[in-house]
Image (cartoon, rainbow, N blue to C red; front, side, top):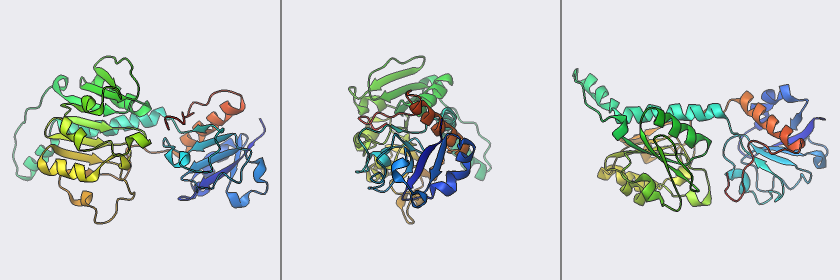
Length: 314
């Protein structure tokens, strides 16, 4: 196929500087430029995006595919200039899903076996073994059952944990994984859970999803692991749950404002672990390969792997 003419669209980062070398091996398929470098906007048929400006798509009437550089597409769907009839894709990387599962397991095992207690014992030179419940009696809820949620649920199930996954629509579970859906309600999905892992997509319905009612349905002294979006967490409700003992620990890899602002309560709260959105890494070469493959599918009249459902926003 003749190389497709593409454009980088972002208000927040220099996509060309970051991804230019990654897409170079695929220049027989797509040639990407910054808007200022494009002489004929009507020839542009592909847009690679991250947080594009609100009017970013207005100059490109011939677009046939719009891609996010990551799993999230909310920043694209919120653009008023987004063409209604152009497919939008996101990155769906199986290796990222495995990395996400490994990251979640680090916190699950640490909480389940109370590894922080051993750190405290070490500082006091205390040699003492502490009992812990078997995995078959330890209840974990995974919110979101897409590529990431399925990988996390599967990894936990293989270790014998009792997993309740929360999906948008009803479906059958397998092994140690039980699946509930929106019709069951979020409180049912997390009831008596000792750990809740959030991997929900960014949609209008999931804003503020992690709130007081959800925390109160969990087992007392439970843990929240938020790997979804910062806007899904009601921050004051989390602080309240931690300060009253309803939750014992929260691990937060995302924040409503990133970077997390200086002086924010999360930085210094003794029951909160903060990481700077590093649960998975977007490897530039992999991103370029997956996006190029989707582009080739579209030009061949096929459905791209990363195609999103606009009604669901993922």
